[in-house]
Length: 580
Image (cartoon, rainbow, N blue to C red; front, side, top):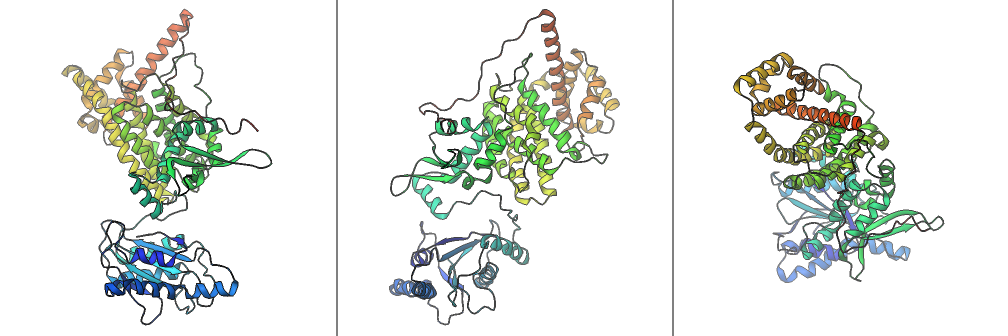
């Protein structure tokens, strides 16, 4: 059950909408299901058509009487005196009766302080139902005694009351809010987007663009330059004395108000972690350029290693199942979670083309899982954040299976993050992580299947495969039966052959791969071992190449940068802090 509190200043205008046909003729049988104590209250929804407008005028005048009295006494208008709270059941819930909706309305106005039970001087209000799944509660926020109501934090109070009502009425239990979610778009913003033919409101579109740009930017200048290159209009809030940038707001290209001016949304209005201060906290730990190396790394394996370290240190309870281990402080885990979100965005830009759509969806869904009331110690996640940024400069797209290996580890990390949020009561973040997990698993399968199919085609002879099966029983006895029953076992046998060719005994390779992380929770243990073996084999090959170059005194040349370029046709914005 979802309440959505807002305020306005036009009583008659809101009544016209509530009792009208709707923007798409979707309002059916609008009528009052509950109201403040007033005998003979006119119901425009049940009146003859020729009396409709007259009754709307009468109802608006009656609801506004305390407001007019206060204005006459004080000699000034009452600002934003119209209180509006639609309450909607979740998809799949049963339809409530009028009597049930009436009780919902009374409990909401009581919980929010609009009209407390037993208070004869509360605000005047009505509840209108014009659809099966929701009502609209409307009130004028001047009490009968002339005072304003005590309705501070009315949105949170309405949410809390709806959680109780859901349980009592047997409705779907929604996740409680914690004040960290991005503000919901208003009905006016949604209607404007529909008129313009946009799938998202301007606020939603800007939030997604800004989140993705922040994840791939190394500093504040790059963040704003990339936004400008996307055609997004930027307005800075400059300190009058220091000339420093104190804040910023963004406007979607072509989104104009009635005066033809861009409609701006502040960074913190788009999402709490997009405020200028939160962004600066992240950027202070960013690499300024690809790290110089004496050996050019495979940045996919480098990111995979950083992810595996994240599991080992930030989520030790997920790494070990047979012993008690100390967990990192929540501030460190929150930092690793934020860096993981950035990794999802960079992988979505650099992974093989056919998996990018699902990865973008995973990154967008995970944005919500990133935000909680725990303040992140971003410097504790510098290694993962650096690895994520350096993926933007990789020369390839992981076509040899490196991307699939990284995504395999990412799935495990995302499961650990969801478990961590769930254990701390972060219901909305846990739900967002689970939503992202659906997309990430799909992307992993899309990346992994071609590699596994190719390895399966190259399975060793039955005799060699049987020898490797015996090695599995010897090295991983507790999981041997599950590994050999895994559909990916033939591909793992190929990986064992490759490891043996590189000089690694199969028994030792299996034992080391199994020790890296527990296998109990793995749905496909052979597949998990497959990626670990391939990474280890590739690492040894890289080290041998490095050793050979060192002996001959040659040094590899740095590859050309393949970081995503800004779209053409836009001039990058200047650094707003450069000229002061």
